[in-house]
Length: 339
Image (cartoon, rainbow, N blue to C red; front, top):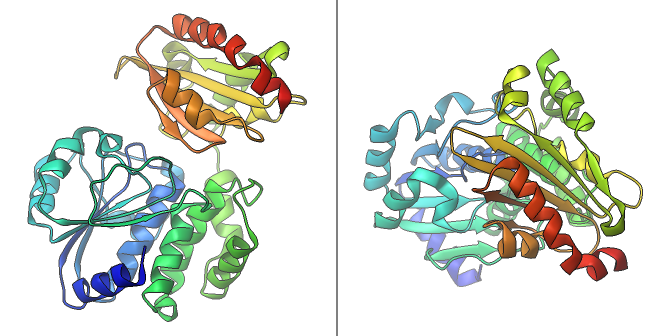
């Protein structure tokens, strides 16, 4: 984003506007942290601001300051569509293609609002008047901090904003252990703590508050873990019946794929989750080193993301999806074994 872009955005924000902020479908910590962090910031300038999530998100994110103001498009479709039609500005955060918003895709394409994209995923679509796109960033929350800094307003960051941004940076860096975590990331985290973010409380809300059913589902997932040593790959599967047995709730499988990647000599991990309601298999992919799961998912599973973390989907059955996945691996044997 150029200095000229920032000056234009400052002029746009100089007087109260109707603003809608949107994360991707199935929003995670970075999506909700960035949207609500920006929400609290814009409210300081008396903008008429609303966060609209395409669908619901996990309970372990519902402590976030401002959670009670979020509208869910799946549940409040007419209200949300009217706000989008009325909007002067739409911020799209933590995604860079309208199809990532599910049922909101059409209404966003039709909107005449000025669109501002802030995101760190690869290969952005060209729909926004202003684009802050940087795949080297740890998280969209880190980018929101930089955005506020470029506007010259970091002095306005309070405990609410700091808590939201801390959340997204923490979750998207795997608690600051992924390669995307830089010295700048740590300096920002230090600033957010100084502004009031309670690191222990946030970590506890996200990682240390589990239901009995969620832990039982984790046990089921680990029991289903399979290793393909010749391709340094591990995968986990969960059927709809297994999800039902353990009273699955949104967010219960968050981070489970990383258990496969934690195995010695494994550089590629996947989890396949059956969703009979959408009639698809949801896929999460993780990798180490230079093996790009973004490229792998784009090529084979209608998805994408980052080099080391991506998602995808399959319309085959669970068993056929896994068979297809295994059949693809020999084509990547050299890349996987060179890591």
